[in-house]
Image 1 (cartoon, rainbow, N blue to C red):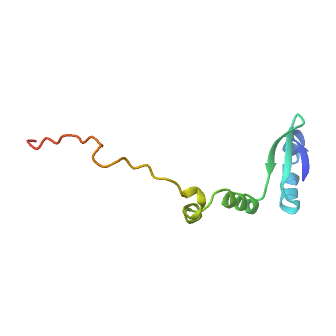
Image 2: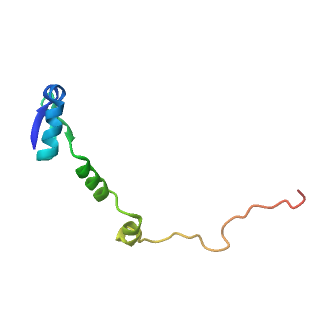
Image 3: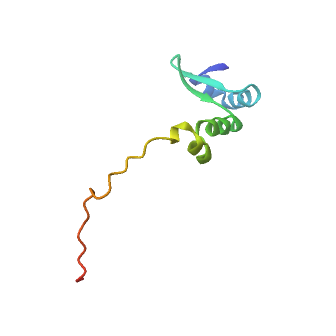
Amino acid sequence: MHTWPVQDAKARFSELLECCLAEGPQMVTKRGAEAAVLVSVEEWRRLQTAARPSLKQLLLSDAARGELNVPARGKARRRSVDLKG
């Protein structure tokens, strides 16, 4: 992954974008510290899909299984209903 100081990334954005599309993700640094990564749309969508499971995958996973806490019958307080209106 190529690293670009933010000043170079701003001044040569078209080149940064072309490198991203041709070579893959490009790192942008700010004052020497990693600040951002430019990735292609295809890579971004792949990462988004991998990070967020589908509803089906979630329901079939072990994380979806657990104990359901249901209060015992008859112990719940019921509100009174005024039928006079």
